[in-house]
Length: 191
Image (tube, rainbow, N blue to C red; front, side):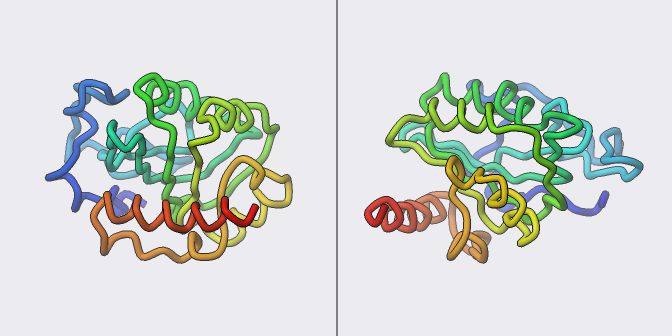
């Protein structure tokens, strides 16, 4: 797991530790010290801790004009034991919301499992983004999406279809956002 790095090809466009509005502003990283771990497995030092023992993230891009962010995730999303959604909502999303971000693209190729507790933080997040906002999960594993749908989190979070197999790395952040907007426009039109 220590070899799985957050996506770095957009670093010439955005670095969260250099963004004064980011919850990670001023953070310094080591390329050699592996201090974070998920269970007994060290993870790459470029992943950012949100306070959870099992879930780490990297804010890949934020656009304060278009009001969106792209976040890559790593680990196990465990609301049952660690209340990971609380950490994500309080430590990251609330900060971004204060700066007008209401569209969230979460990339979950490296999210290995999901364990449910309750929906209160998802509901709060959904309410906070308003009618113009949305939360999208890109490329989460099938069993993770299935578990989220089983407990009806898809009421708050958009998944499935083109979002499950989206080749986001071949696009710029703006193109990813544009493509996701097209998908969401179609979905909202038919709901």
